Image (cartoon, rainbow, N blue to C red):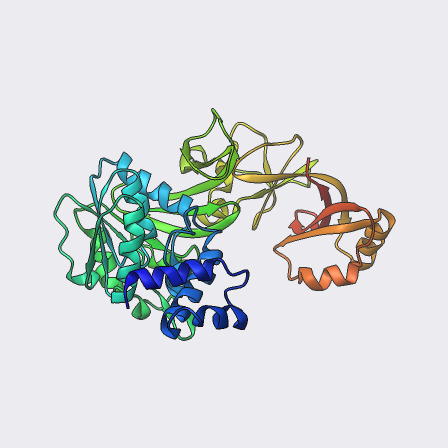
Length: 396
């Protein structure tokens, strides 16, 4: 079967309102062989799922596992720009999957060699990399690749088993020993891991960048040729142009660009523990993972609500890419009956529940509070220096 027939089937599948429906399959099988129809319908469904990750999803090809593991486009572009800014000219993606990181590297002008052990996935990567200007896709194991001495390497080891994702290094592909050798070697290397990486797995002498995209902590990447320690990298979208960002990664959507802000340990300072102030700040998840809540807004008077809870407080509003600010309307003892009365009295129908440091099921609590009415509020449940409190808040 020719690629032309397969792509024609994909075009027809893409035009279906619901490619996963039985009716869509029946219609396509009138014009195309069953095998090509199955492939095309799968691709059409994957493309729709991929729209949340990729601006060019409608042109790309995917595998189910590859789409799940693939870096989001703005995150891949941030990494590629880091390579370029470090003076790298060529990147070898050792275990490239569907090629999303290789695409980002090609798009910033780097030479790319993408290595993939699975033949079908390599074919997908070859198609996708061509969309980004091209590169070389090599069918083979990462361990057998021989990058030149001046090339950088990127690895995103697979760690999915039949039981789900695993932090057992015996389940990693390529092997964890191979990954560690790349980080310990002379060449520039970056390793992408999940944001929940156990600290004991992180080797000495690397930089660990915890990356969030639009509020989701999506990865921890290890870099061997940059300053050692943890970083929080926050990637979001703002209206363009913006003069105050540390990096811009377009395009996002019309009139917007993706921007990157990086929090480093340089501004860390001791934080006092005090009672709740007029405002409460919830640090971005990447900041919490990086252990840098004490580096947020060093010029402002911030303090902790509790030594072991990652909420900050202040007497003035704070706008920061590294934290969300809430105005405290009322401080209540954490008591479900009293909180339900407050919700009823203030006709709150839209209720956001946040919690940290307390064993609370927000969904179960919402049912107990029975929100009803036209108003909205945020309730933050947290340990404080004065005990467990329910902070009724609004966004300023």
